[in-house]
Amino acid sequence: MIKAGRLSSPAFVVFGDDWGRHVSTMQHLFGRITERAPVLWFNAIGHREPSWSDLGRASQKVFSYMRRGQRGPAASTFRLPPPREVIQPRVLPWHSNRAVSAFNRAILKRAVRSAVARAGLQEFVLVTGTPPSAPIVGECGEDASIYLCMDDFLVLPGTTPSMLAPLEQELLRRVDAVVATAQRLVEKKVAASGRGYHLPQGVNYEHFAPRRPVPAELANLPRPLIGFAGGVGPAVDVATLHALSKAVGRGSVVLVGPVTLPMAQLDAPNIHVLGPRPYAELPAFVQAFDVGIIPYIEDDWTRAVDPLKLLEYLAAGIPVVATPLPEVRKYADAVIQAPLGDAFALAVLRNLTSSGSLRGAAAQQFAMNHSWEHRAERFLEIVDEVRAAVSRRSAA
Image (spheres, rainbow, N blue to C red):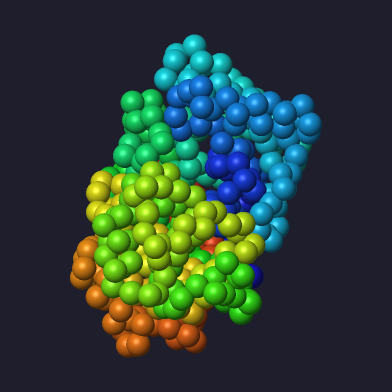
């Protein structure tokens, strides 16, 4: 729960991802804030120009319009209070086209003002995690605006940087502050106001800490179980996975999450690719690991990534070995950091028996101190600071 002693929170209009479709940073954060303040949530408006492969997703959204209209709560995959209203904006995804941009701007302004009127809000803060929302920032009657930046979209796989770069620059000119999950993003994504804040990722402690039975898929695998929970894509160093495969001998390397790499790259007798699991089931898998790993390469994207899974591993009570990325280094007292390859595999083997990384109750206590409740409290403090700065500027 967020502390009751704070100043009264304003309402929020939030441009995020599709509520309930995936478990995301913004949904974790605002799932806690809805306990304190009204939240009007706008689903995703797109970070890439569409291709033929997007037709399936587009048809789902069209069906969503037909089934429940423009607004209504979406089915959530995790147990948090939903926003007061979830709005599905009817915009076109070609944001770099001038005609489309003008159309989207008019649609979004009308949608925000209508939602605010329906909710009877007298004041609100606009928070956006999406650069294509830039044209309406400062034009919807908000008291203040914040860019909640969780990735460097200009190097993030799966986006269209040529479309997003000018939109992000416009967003930085318009917002009153930037709040970013990585210090590198605070330094790179600078608002015209100069106000920037570092708000690291948190953890859904109550979800990952309670003990659960070992899943059937893991019960008969030879130990030790060296586990990775997350997307297995270009950021994951495949050579390190194979080094681990050899180092653990008869043990198992377990990958839980969606795979975007060619499966042939993961072919080894003791590398077990389980694929994605529902968020509700994920803690049982993580708790069964003997060591949780984050074997990320270092590149322009991962230097700005604060891995959610690191705190999730600790909340589950398991030791962690990770590559020394900038946002991992701040947890040096809690996890083992090792370079990729054989050195990483050796660190994992040592961490099976040593106390180099926190584990058990100590790991869980550490994670509890970094919960999403703590992050939400800090975010609301930042909102107070930004509102006060905007008020002083307006009065000057």
